Each structure stands twice: as structure tokens, then as C-alpha cells.
Image (tube, rainbow, N blue to C red; front, side, top):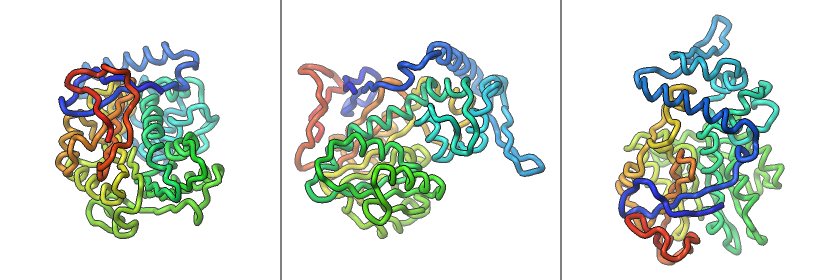
Length: 358
């Protein structure tokens, strides 16, 4: 990985970095062709903002059927049966992201066989790269929070199948330290997948792993049930990599305030949000039809954490080079520095000059 100064538009007082990571798309064939076709569809959709995303309807037998609402969407799904099955049966569930994070699998989680044209898009679509790169940012950020000599508690909110969490643990250079995971999600199927994959890493329910089937909107935003269940200031780390953009601004503020109460002084909450400037956002939202999210600008994300009572000096933002997501590291109880990103002396001068990451 490679941390760099952020060159885009951002609030003047925001500590923000760009980052680049190796990805499966770097070496996989047909990258230019796939990227060109997707970019063409995105441009066409941007030129016609009134066009609507595809709908999922149900036939007389109860089978889900994808119904494109514009010709560009129809073109996207034509001759891509796995992509069609993925959109129809898995989006927006956590298992939809499993396919994006593991595009070389032979079958989708529902058993649909992967076809070549669909695989190209799961590998090369900019938003697919973005899902994988935000997981790499998480892995880079969490390392400093899970090396306490005794035990480390990590709570993953809306964990899904917990692929980024398990990948981060696999990459962490632990030297005998114990990490106790609590995975919280409303989807029992995703939690079952997480349990199976965690067991393959030697992380077992009842020992290092706790699974909680909870709806975060009901148990952490509308009331404090989950906060009471987990206890305040019990975790070194809380991540919510995939849920923040599903909350409106008011709920996002409440969610952040309560998530921060789970964290011990010196710990952090890590969240991500799709950016309004994501390069192929029209293709994703209106071509493919990933619905019901709130893409946000960097300024809007700062406004939310300020409304939650988090000062700017407690937040570091990382935007991978694909430009899809902003990942925010929000620290609690900043009495002493956790270190800083390795930038050469003199880099990042100006409005977004990197500061010590406290």
C-alpha cells in the first residue's frame, strides 16, 4: 500500500490522504475493455438524469425477475446471467458484497455459476475495486488498535459476512495478542457465512467470536439497546464499513455518537461512505441499481462528525485512488498520538496538509 497526499477538493481543516493498493484487476485480462464499456454506460446515464434504475418484480410463481427501466441498464445485464442473478437475488444483502470481494469464485452464494462476462465486471468495475480497496484501508488502520498485550475487543457493526474484518486479522502481525470479535448484523445468512469463514481462521464462537443478530436502526439509532447490551467503553475498535451510507444525516449523527460510546479512550470507530464524486456513480445507482444509499461529499461527512461532537483533529480520512469511498478513522480520547502516516518531509503542504494522526 502507498499513502499519498490527497489532491482533490476537501475541507481546509480536514486531515486526509489518498491511498493506492494492489488489486486483482491489475493483472486480470480485459481490464481496458471492461472499463471502457462501463465508462460509456456511466456517461450515457449522466447525460440522462431522469432515467430510473432497474426494478425487481415477482412472477406468478414467486420468482424474482429483473426489469430494466432504461436501455443502458438493459445493455449492462444482457448476456451476463451471473450479474443478473446477483442483482436480482443478492443486492443489497451482505452476500452481494461477497461476490465483489471474491470475484474469482466459480459460483455466487446462491449457487449461480459465474460466467466470464459477469466476472470481468466484478473484477474491473471501479466500484468493485472500491469495495476491495476500502477493506484494505480498514486493514491498514486497525493494526494499531489490536496489539494490546492482553486482550483486544473489536465490534463490527453491520458486519455482513465479515470478509474485511477477517482479512484484516489475517494480515495483522499479532504476536500472541488475543482479539475478541463481536459481529453484529441483521442477516442470519451473512452471520452464518461469517461463522464458517472465521472458523477456518481458528476463530470460534464461544471463544474469540460472538455473533449478534440485531437491526442497528432499531437497536442503536432508535434506542440504545445494543449499547446497553455491549457496554460502554468496552471495545478498542468499532468498525461500520458498510452501513453508514444507509443512514440519513440525522440517523448518521446518532449512530456515530452511540458507536463512539462503545469505544475505550484511545480506540477508534472506522466508517466509510460512498462519495458523491465517485467516478461511476450513475452506472452503479441507476444502471445496476444499488439503491437506498446516501452518497456524501467530504464536506457533508465532516458536517456529520462535527454534529456528533467529534472535533476535526480526531478524524483522519483516507480516499483510495479509485475515488469510490471515503474511509474515516474517528478516534476517542486523543491524549496521546497513535503515530502518523508515512509521508515524506514537506509533502501535503497547503489546505489539506497531513497532521500528526493523534
